[in-house]
Structures are given as C-alpha cells and as structure tokens.
Length: 468
Ligand code: GLU
Image (cartoon, rainbow, N blue to C red; front, side):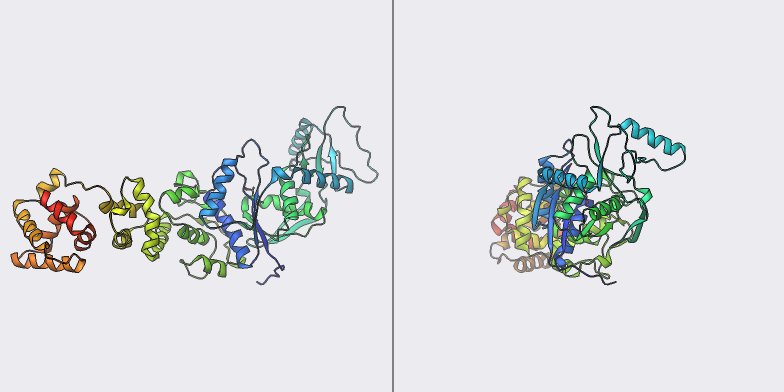
C-alpha cells in the first residue's frame, strides 16, 4: 500500500515521566525515531508532565539517558507540557470564543447521577449535555460560586474514522464520545487536550504510540478538526507480551531499559531486538542501525502483539559481541572488570576477549571470564590441588617449566612445548593440560590452555608453577 508522505515527516515520542523508560516505551520511541530517520524527518521529544504528583525530573533524566544509550537523540525537545500552560489556556479561550467548547457548571455529583441514570436505562454512561449550547436552547441559571469545567463540543452525528497505519481502518460513532472535559475547574487543561495542542503546534505528521491510546484518538481527531489543524496519521502499536502471553511486566524479568545495560546487553543488540518486536523486514533477524533506518516503514508493522523472548535477545546480543572489534569490546568490558575488583590492564584485554567472546552472551559473562586474567592470582583450592596436582602431575609440570625457559612465549610456541612434553612421556593431552590449568589459574576449566598461558605471560606462569 503506498501512502502519500508529506514533505517533512515529524514524529514524536511523548512519555509521561513517572518512572524509568520501560521496554514498551523504548520500542515506541524506536519506531518513531526510525520512521523519522527513514524519511529524513524530525524526531521530537515531548515530556507529558501534567500529572504533577507522579512526574519527576529524575524520571525525565532516566528517560533521556535511556534514549541516549539506545542512540535515539531527539532533533527537537525535550518540550515540557508544564511550560506550555499559557499556550493551552490561550487555545481554550479561543475555542470558547469560537463556540467549539463551552463552560459546564455541573458538579461531579450531578455528572455521576447522569451516568447512573444512563446505566439504569441500559445506555452507555455519559454526560447528558445539560450545558451544551445549541441554537434556541436556554441554559440553566449559573449556580452561585461554582467554578465551571470546559467541555469540548463534540460532533453529535456521524463517525470519526481514520486509516490506522498499523491496524487499518478504525471508526467510532460520535454518539459514543460525549463532550470531553478539556479544562478543570481551576483552568488546568486535561490530558487529551494538551496532546492535541502539542501535536498541532509541533506539526506532528505521524503519531506512533501504544494501542492503549486507540480510544483517545477519535477525541483528539475531533478537537484537531475543531481547531482547523491538519490531522496527523496515526499508528497504534500492539503491546508486548511476556513469554507466558500476559502483558510484559516485572514478573517476566527486567522491564527497565537501563537494567539491560547493567546486565551486559549492548545497545546495538537492544535496538535490533526491540525493532523486531512488532516490525519485520522479510526474514532478517540481524541488521544494523543503518539498515533499520533504511528499511523501516509502516507497512511492515505487525497488527498482532509480539512476545518478549529472552533467549532470542541473548542470541542477538551474542551476535553483536562476536562481531564487535575486540578493542571496542575491551572498552566496554574494562569498567565491568574494575567493578569486580579486577585490573583490566593486567592483560592484553582485547586478546583475552578474543579468546572468550565466542562463548559469551553478555558483557557481564565476558567480564566474569576475563577475571581469569585480571583478578589477583589465587592458587587452587586444597581439593582441586589434591585431585589434580598429584606427584606424577607435578613431575610433568616441572619438566614443562624447565623447558619453558627456552620457549618462545606464543600460543604456538607453548602448544609445541606441550606436545613435546607429552610425547617424551607418552602422555595424553589432559594429563598435562588439566594440571597446568589448576596450577597456573587455580581452575580446572579455562579456554584453550596454550592461549591462556600465552596471555598470562611467561614470568607469571613460571612463578605460579614454582609456587605449587
Ligand atoms: N504520554 C503518553 C504515554 O506515556 C503518550 C501519549 C501519546 O503518545 O499520545 O502513554
């Protein structure tokens, strides 16, 4: 399906800063970001902070940090709704003047009574239009001392419809939508109204957001029309489910994006994985950020909910670890080694990571593995020593140490030396390799022993052999 794209695409991410950026929000942001980038458009960040009780600067910072980590810098913003109150008030005043909004003096109790009455009749609970001005209608007297709310004069007949970029045609009968409160008695604008004014002022052309907002869309469209604004296109992204088919939540593991940084996931992998949750490009599972931008369009956004799959995320992360240059990997792993009390400079870290990276799914696993080289040496436990450093084994180790003096200390040199020692004694590989590991690293299992010894350096290896 081809759609006409306006000359400059403008998308926005509009989080409510009530906590960290969760996976669902990050994916919505990613889709909006990728859509803007694909069309060489503009990506706007708007902070919807009108719920003053629940909003915090700390949450704003956390959201911005998470977006930066994922590489989704906004081109404009952050704009804060709380800083736009004057603008909302001005638009409200204009609507009152134009007759597209009106004061309603019903008390909350009266509105509740109307709803109750509608329910009793078997109708949908709704405001009954008492204060809605109509030609020739006489409005009730204004109750003394009561502050009015402002209601939007919603069209009464027909339907409000749009062709959703993801879900296809959606239509609501206008009778389903009563006259929405757009300002409270104290004059503060309500949620849907702020969104509308912002989308209009920020000239948003494409709204991609969670499908929990589908019910807001017809109301927002009607208000935009009343304001004479150009309508954006809307695309409502289905939610992410946990592996058990329930809405993804803490029960399924971490939902805070930054928790994945802590756990050793690469932002490259997160972006790749998140993009595939609800979007596809043929059978491609692995793609770069550039490919995502090049390929991302609304036609391949999925109508159905997607499922969080930690195993697949690990697989994607392992891929990015494997294909990352070791020097870059070293930069990312070094702080994690330091956090474990290790010294990342104790070894040629890129070389050590080259040895470890094929088996690692996360940076944390890599750091654990690298501690073999970066932690202070700890000799084998008495148990391991007893099992593997038998008198026979010690004799072989001594022979190895003696010949090591004249060996060129490379992986190949060490491999040749091991072979020689084994051949001289008619032994099999494990009869030297395991005691060597235990004596030199304190562990019975390590990556290839020749490579490990090469990285540790001849001096350290001989000192440790000496000390057993
Ligand atoms: N602030 C809303 C939210 O966090 C998003 C509103 C929108 O995208 O229109 O769910």
